[in-house]
Image (cartoon, rainbow, N blue to C red; front, side, top):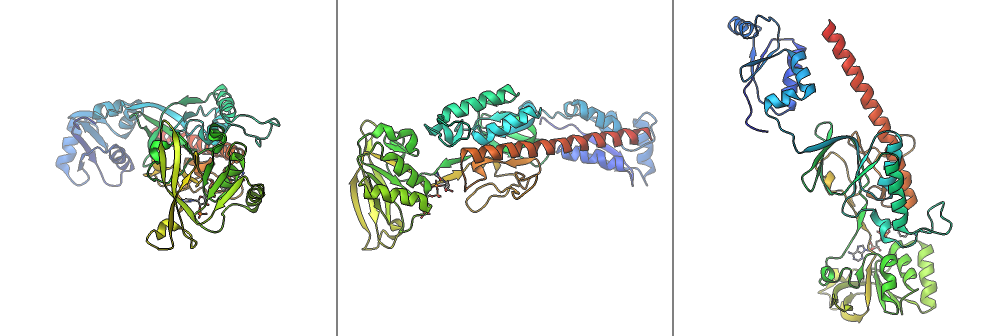
Length: 438
Ligand code: NDP
């Protein structure tokens, strides 16, 4: 906003239009001087004189210019002229959209397909991992309708095509923040562009966790990976290390036996988190001599170079579990171990930073909380008009097909919300028109 002009409002007691006009200026963050004319004859005369004989409150003046009463002020606001008079510049707002979707993973793209078909003309902001987790997968064998399997990137591209066909628009960019303090939502991108939107679907997914250990930054993509299915084949006949004890670690270790000399699994405690199904598969491979399990073991350093990849790693082991918490314990053994590739499979962190200043609620792990349960509105968050779908909400299933299901639910919930909004707006306009006629 540029320098604010002087706003004066003549009001009287028990005057709902006076309250509305004051609320309007307050909502714009504009200061005003208020003169209550109810019991002040001098002020009343002054108002009548300045307002060319009008004897009704409110009367609004901006920099000494007579604007008029509530109806006039409201009309100016609708056309945007009031903001001009007030010097409110909103050049940064690139565009208003009915619906903005954060994320172009399976959840976001499915939401876009449904929202496009519902004429909500969604704008999808791609985020810093366009296409989401599925772009890291070579072969998706369990997505219904593809008995011969389909490549992750191909599935994503087909969904993009389908979404744009129904009117969705994709935009490169990363959402920095969403402001829900007034409506429409203000969605600010990292490049400074601002969009406004009547509804927002958060389908921003979850990013693979890393350990933050020495060597990690340098070697990520050079022998260190968070995606065995994407990168396993590059390290044929090497010894490989998988870190983690959940389903992903077990699945990835099993998958890597196709390429590795031996796959080692380092897990920080005695019990695996993974389901029996995967633990059994891994034990079969152990019996076949393809996998070796290192329990109560943690990785503390990676050694190698970008030219030659991972050379070896440093591990710590303590039978009591969580050895990095027991580095001073004489029972903790530190040792170097030769491997040619390392895969982190230690879970994911939901991408919710941009929602920090909104009223959404996150669970202890940072996943976005939605209403869930049965019936409509399952994807509603604690902020009306803001919906959540996919891995950013779902810490458990995290499957392409479940993300797609949630994406469709979010678009349907958003559509219902937008229709309610439209109905409420037209009733307010009708009431307004009726009041003006009185
Ligand atoms: P999980 O959170 O289930 O497992 C993460 C594993 O990494 C845990 O064993 C955890 O140890 C370990 N870990 C976490 N942080 C660290 C750390 N700092 N240092 C060392 N180890 C660490 O994540 P997943 O990605 O395995 O699975 C996520 C979800 O996806 C699950 O619901 C899973 O069922 C599902 N999934 C299903 C698959 C399938 O069925 N095909 C395949 C892959 C995933 P600890 O156990 O001690 O906490």
